[in-house]
Image (cartoon, rainbow, N blue to C red; front, side, top):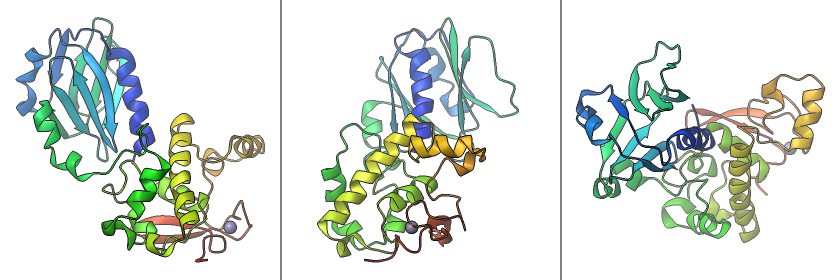
Length: 274
Ligand SMILES: [Zn+2]
């Protein structure tokens, strides 16, 4: 399932072909949205924002297309009239004179006014986006200290979109490994230095993964492992998917655990409670 950085990259692709170019045709697969096709004619996309795994395509006529990819949704950006070969169902097509942005398979799609957007139940519930340029280390530390979060185990908090939006399963393992914290630890039990380190690694790993298309480890190490001929999965992550392989910090074999019904990869030595 794509996580925040992957959704942000998809948004970049949509923004690149649509921003400031008039929509010359629009199609909607879901009957409830068909009435909007005409209202988009001549409108231009002013921004494509993301909130966690939701994408907000903003038009200059005051409407915003809300879409959540869930498990199967996927955006394609293509030259006009060159539909991709796929058996997926087309849900949204936004055409300019030269290009098309196409959303397949997603079903959680709505066209909203600004007011409806502010009241949207999912958007109201979720925390700040991990790639929001205004999200700072201090703000994450403050969230870790909030009453509703500070007594939760980090391993469960780091999958909860109400805490921070956009973190999924691989980022959870990678951030907790990079910060060298025990996934069972509660923020309230950590000292200020450890809290700050988690916050710092949250931003660092998320931004890095966005820039590198989902590679979280250091570029030097990734290059070396690639040269050694390791498969992609093996030089992509510090901990995720590396069950039984030596930890890059201490060489203790990485363990796979289950937390929040999903796999979590942990070094039992450098991520044990201090
Ligand atoms: Zn280790």
